[in-house]
Each structure stands twice: as structure tokens, then as C-alpha cells.
Image (cartoon, rainbow over the protein chains, first blue to last red):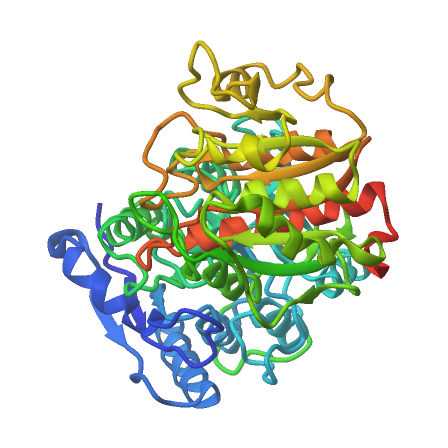
Length: 274
Length: 254
């Protein structure tokens, strides 16, 4: 498989994680285990210690330029906040995908611990600032206020308990609001027994094969324009989780390689509102 | 609801659970949501208090320890007791019995406490019903009766394992009730435990038509490399509290 138009985008940012820290070390832990011969070239954005605004602006610039050059981003975080920068880069290049979120947490808070740039707010920021369609799956942790927002906004969401009960026909394609899709994977969507190395683990996640099957159902027949894996926290656990994250990246790359940047991609695409 | 950390000064297990277990659960609980998307209910948004200071119970004298816990039951509240050694369960059960003599005592555990001999002495002859044993013996130790082993809970989820229990319950939970993959730790190495979703379904079924008088979770040995065990137990407690409030919505006001 050739990944010539895929680019690994490393996003070692951590500025707002709530409890256990170390997600900035995620990319450095993963990269040595990737097989170089089969892997796309990489670009690293910034470094630790910058503000969310500066880091996200730089991430957006990098992704916008990649996209306009016809390349597709396979991003590795970092905390979940980095997804905002990648999506902003796509939007600025004129690409407006449906954002599919695999996650244990809804991440729909308007702000958390005094900042709207918290990893607990990233999907709310993407919805409010870019107006993109979204689909969240695997969710099993949210506040009552986030539940109210989901009810009022009508945003589609598939909870973990619904997946466990067999959501839809087994193996069937799941509906999404559009066919150009961006996939953001918070590794805590899988069960902590599969992905223990994350900062805010939640019991009741999917097993490995159930997780891959869910990805298959979401991506079937759709155009993957980019993806990210975020919230790997090596200090919590790295032996099992590093290998699992690498395998997940390798699993997604063929779908990304088969995807195409929509022809409508033009510089200076609209940011806010959609 | 009153969350209390209860320690015995000395446990009887190979590693002595002390302050680390309750403290790790309380720390994780700060990052666990009270909202339950499955029931569309908040576990509680008022009336939850955590005692600032731990309660120290005398080791090997759970009956005396129970007297220290009795004040937690005042005003109709639900005490949520975080031990400490697994022997704290005996003190918590005795305190619930003191508060409500009609209470049935239910222990969810993968094994009998090593210090199990202390339990009957503290409970004045009242039997403890045990569910979730991974390797159940032919005859339980004195003071215990077997309700359902782990294998039955896992393989026969349709059957109601709680049908012989009364309307008022004290629920004791030991972490080895769970499968080690779900709840890893140095105190939980035996395979054959209960998975997350089955555990939720079992407790929700238990509390659907019963009043929870007291709740304790004792014997957690945290491992810094396996923090998801702390999160799992914190979330399990919140879910249990939520199920209890489905039955008795006024608990949160106590």
C-alpha cells in the first residue's frame, strides 16, 4: 500500500488535561514503533509549552497547506484539543467534512476549568465555530448540561450502552450526515483493558475487534479526508497502549490513502458558521 | 449521602489496604460524571458530603468499629463507606443492622475475606449473603451463605439472583468481584469476575425494588500503573447511588 499523499502530523500538545498528565509525549512514544518503509513522512507542529491559541493556529496552518497540496493528515496527539487545529486547517482549505468522534467523553462543554480550549470542550468548539455536521460514538461520560445540549441541538450520538446492545444490524453501515468524513479517535473510546494508557479512563468501552468493527461501519463507502488519534498518555501506561495505538494508525491508513481531498478545496475557505 | 473513609489501623491481608484505596477512589471521582446517560438521571446534584477526616476503627474489633459508623445513618442519609481493609465491611454491616434490624446483608466479592472469621462475630449471628465468588467452596465459612457464584451471574443473566433477598439491603463490595481485566490490581488476580455492564445490570436489578440502607466498598489496593481501576470503582459507586435514588429520590436531600 502506498501512502504517498498521506502525511503523519505530530501534535505533542498538552495544556488543559484535567488529571493525569503526559499526553504531550504520545507522538514520541508512537513514532519509533511505526514501520518506516510503509509509513508516510511526518511533520511535527511546535513543541510543548505554547498556548492553545498559538498551537492550534500553527496546526491549522500546517494542515491547510497540506490539504491545498493534495495531502491528507494522519495526526497523532497530544490532548484532544489538537483536533480543533486540524479541523480548522481543513475548513480553511475549503474542506467541510462530517466530523466522526470516537470517544468515551462527549467533549461538548462550552468551557471547563475556566477555559473554552479544554480537551473537554473540543467538539463544542468545532460545532460552534465551524458548524460542521458531527457524529459521536462510544460515549459513556457526559454531564447533564452536555446531555441537554445534545437534546436541544439534535446532534447524533451513539452511546456505549447502545453499541453494547447491538446498535443497528451487525456489520451494517452506520448513517452519517455526509460522505466526506474526518475521524477523530480519542483512544479512551476503547475499554481501559485494551487502552489503559490514557488520562481519564472510563469503564465500559469497546473491545479491540468491536472497535475495529465500529470503524468499519462508520467508514464504509465514505471518503476519509483525515484522522487523528489523541489522548495517549505514556506515563500512565505505555507497553500495551503504544502497540495498540500503532496498530490503530496502521488500520486507518489504507482508508486514508484511498480517500481524496474534495475538488472544492480552495484556499481561504470560510471558517465560522458554515 | 455521606462519603466516609474508614480505615483499620492494621489489616490482616498480605498487603494492607490503608488510606491509598479510598483516597485514590475519591481523587478519581472528581473526574467522573454524576450524570448517567443510560437512565438519563443525575446520580445526585445535592446532598452529597464527604467527611474531611477519616474514621479509624480498631483492628479485629469490628463490633466496636460499627459504633463509630452509626452517626453516619442519622437524618435518613445513605452512608457510602470507603475502606480500608476488607474487614471494614463487617463494621459497616453491623452499623446498618444497628440502624435497621430488618436489613439483609449482601456481599459482592470474588473471594471470602481472609479475615472473614471476624464478620459473624460482629453481626451477632446474622448471615451474610455472598454473590460473585469465583471459586465457591462446597460449604461456606460460618456466618456466610452462598447466593450465586460468579459463573452463574455471568452465564445466567436472565435469572434473578436477588429474589430471596428482603426489601432493605446493606451492600458491601470488594473489588475482586470484578474481572481483573476490568479492575486490575494487586488484590485482584483471580480470573472469572464480573464485567462492567453485567455488574451495572445486577446492581440496578437489585435496587429496582429495594431500599439501600448502607453501602461500603472495601479492600481496594490501588496501583499507580493501573489508574483505571480507581476510575472504575468511583464510577461504580456513582452508578449505585443513582440506582438507589431511582428507588428513593429523597435520599439526596438527607
